[in-house]
Image (tube, rainbow, N blue to C red; front, top):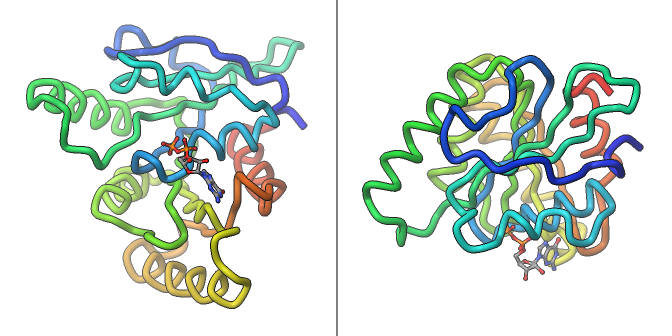
Length: 202
Ligand code: GDP
């Protein structure tokens, strides 16, 4: 699969630091601790890929992982958005961040889809809905990744999946897909790869 060649490329704290807006990229969002790093690592079959996103000072940056095919097609990136949900960020930084992320979702032509990572036991918090709303407002497809599925039995998983599917359909129509996932057991990793590869044209 094409994800094994993913490599850290750059970190952007301002729009000027983003790579040229000509390729294909898929962004990953989620509350802090939801399991986004583990999901990225499982997707790319690399144990420490997303560790860079966690280094101090990097928590307000867009982290780009490059998986452009060697035959130099347009650039392909996975973009790790900062985890949200902790209100410890100074107000000024938060305003900068809001502006940056808002502009990114509004104007980034290379952005082809959004994955929102949520703990299957605590899905669809306010910011999760806001992120999904950003994508849908742009006409972009989004995918709700309900992770830590290994923490629930099959019956409870199915129940959560159905409840989230119903809520998303009511809020956003059919532009948001949903799946259960586990970075721990790798449940659902093929399904995630298929969705993201499709958006990236890989
Ligand atoms: P992030 O802050 O969203 O990047 O979350 P991490 O990937 O760092 O995960 C946060 C915590 O949840 C860590 O202790 C992980 O080991 C744990 N975790 C992440 N994914 C899973 C999963 O699928 N199953 C279980 N049981 N734990 C997970």
